Every structure is written in C-alpha cells, then in structure tokens.
Image 1 (cartoon, rainbow, N blue to C red):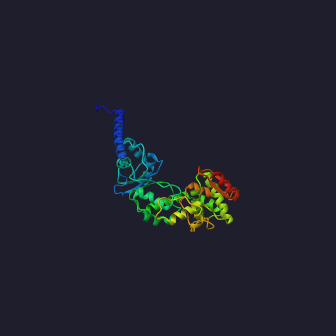
Image 2: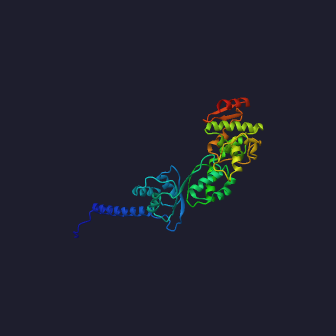
Image 3: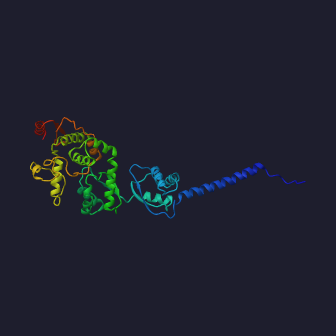
Length: 331
C-alpha cells in the first residue's frame, strides 16, 4: 500500500498563482519597458511642433500619432516620473529611434526656436526688418521673394528655427493666411460683389484706416459703398503707402504722416485720391479682424465719409459739408 502523502490541491493552486503572478509581473514590466523604448530603432530625425496651449497629454497623443513613441499612456507615465509637467512651444528635432526618456530630455531642454511677432498692418519691408532682427535673414532677399505675397503674410506670433530659410518662412506665413482666410469667409466677401483678391486689398486698407472692430466694419462699409458708386476711395493709408514706396531707399520709418499736397503730388496707381477703384495690390498684411470687417460690411450705410481725431475717436458724415464740419470741430 502506497503511504506517500497526496499533494495538497490548495497548495498547488497557491504555488501556481504565485508563479503566474511572478511571470505576469516580470512580463508586464518587460512590456512597459518595451513601450518606453524606441518605436523604431532605425527611425530618422523629424521635426515635431508643439503649439501654444498644448499640454503634456496633447503632446503624448501627437507623438503616438506620428509614430515617434509607442504609447501615449506610457509616455505620460514616464513624463510624470521624470518631472515633465509642462511643455515649451516650438519645433523640436525628435526621432523614433529615441526612448521615452530621450524624448523627454529633449522636450525639457526647450525649443531652440526663435519667437517672432509680426504685427497687423505691417508691409513686407517691416516684416523683413523684424525677421532680420530676430533671425538675421537677408532683408533684401526676403523682400524680393515675398513682395508678391504682400497682403497674404498673416500677422501672428511664430516660432522659427534659427536656420529657417526664407522660403520656409514665407510658406509658413502664407500657409497661416490660407487657413485664416477660410472658404466661408471668402464666400461672404464674394457676396459683397468682390473677388477674394479684392477682399484682401480692401482689408489691407481697412487695417491701416481703423483700430477697433466696430470702426473697421464702418470704414469697410463706407469704402465699399464708394467703390460701388464709382467714387474714389480717398483713403489716406494708400497715399502713405505710395509715398513711402517712392522714397523707400532713404526711409527710416514707414507710414509717415502725409500732407495736403501729397494727395496730388504722390503719383502712383496706389494713390486712391488720384485713381478710381482699388489699388493694384494690398498695401499691408491685414489681420483676421479686418478681413472679417470686409465680410461684415454694410454697403447700404448712410455714410460716405469718416474722420478720426487725434484721440482716436471716429466721426461719420453723410455729406461732404458734414464731413468738413466734423474736421473743423474735432481736429
């Protein structure tokens, strides 16, 4: 008779569970480490952009979408462990060949990009000055390459790599404009009886002629009414642009004041005191507010004239007599 003790089934179960737990623990640990590792050891370097307002969670998702990392969830765990609680805006050179830790190290180091703010209503030459100041680009080369895009270089804050080419910069500004000047906005401008190009030209004038949203919409309404009537636009900003352009080689500051004689003596297709209709091209690079002002303009406005005093207050008139009275009373 076999008197050997039979194995305890409960003990067997406990041992099996312990073994499985150990296997599971080390298996999970191996898998997490795998997910923390390079997504593609042979991957090449790529530019990765972090936009304003993006969080670590947003960045993790985008890194996964671009296949730079294997798992957004595991990346967020790594970021927390390594003290990455916020990210800097800009361009970063990353690679799928990097581990999570290596990616985090780059992000913690901050972008090498240069912040450049281009103001609404600047002309190409002013943009060239700012880019030269921040990125040391050749001003003359930029002006030569970008002049054809006057009006379509969207004013905004950008982050450029220190070695960004002139072509890249122009493509970035133009691409931003194309996004802002949406098909819906163009449709509204076409409903005003204008082509999209005419809309940009008018917006560039409005940008230089008005400040607030309300004033710009009123000015756009008046200028559109004049245009529809076949009346000259008589916009001072166009004379400023033409005058500055004629003496651009010796000009120290753009948008200089103009004088009464300039309305006649500055002979240029851009001078709307001498020529009917719109100038041949935009006189500045307008903001979204000015483009929207053209879209929202009311050409049935009762007014034909506007005047701004030295404090920035605006006065509107239906007749030339009322307009002259406003000037006399508020100049």
